[in-house]
Every structure is written in C-alpha cells, then in structure tokens.
Length: 114
Ligand code: AMP
Image (cartoon, rainbow, N blue to C red; front, side, top):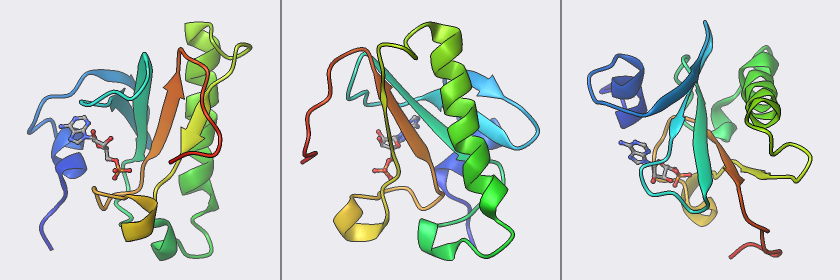
C-alpha cells in the first residue's frame, strides 16, 4: 500500500518544519496552523487510525503524549496550558491516515470543540 504524506515527511521526501525527533516519534509544525503553536506528533511506525491499534501498541500512542508534554515544557507554555487532539475517521475529521496527535497552544481554547 502506498505510504501517506506523513511517511514521506518521515523519509524526508517532502519538507516539514521538524521540531522534535527520536527513534520512534517525529514532530513538525502543521502547515495550516489553527493556533499560534500547532505541532503534529506522529509515530514513525505507520498506523492508519486509532481503530487500528492492537494490544502491544500502548507505547505507540503513549510516546506521542510524552513527547508533546516535553515539548510544551521546553517551549515554556506547559503551565499556561494547551490542547491535544487525535482525530479518527470521517466524523472525527481525520484527513491523513497515519495517526497523529495535534498539539495546539498559544491561545485560550474553546469548549466544546466544533
Ligand atoms: P487530521 O485532519 O487530523 O488528519 O490532521 C492532518 C493535519 O495535517 C492537518 O491539520 C493538516 O493541516 C496537516 N498537514 C497536511 N499536510 C501537511 C504538511 N505537508 N505538513 C504539515 N502538516 C500538514
């Protein structure tokens, strides 16, 4: 199966503004930011949607949350706060089928989300 856009970013086949990388996770700025800070945290292991996670994949998602929180602390907005979102399939508004955690910060968020 052809890779997604995010596989191409991992492979450096298309450019991205990368803010963090380790063995398992890549993070880069969203090309259409919805807040002053909008970063996507993705696993290097391709998983299409949250529905496709299987037992044993706990760390795949856990690492995204840990990396996002570490980034928030490093960038100095952890105490002010931020929002993390993972969209799943049509009703969740997912458009790229490689799971990703959105980190949004730099403004007060609304609730409920649209
Ligand atoms: P979602 O709608 O939850 O699947 O999120 C996909 C996100 O990827 C959207 O917020 C897009 O703006 C973002 N996006 C799409 N193409 C790129 C790209 N080339 N570089 C960075 N972010 C992108």
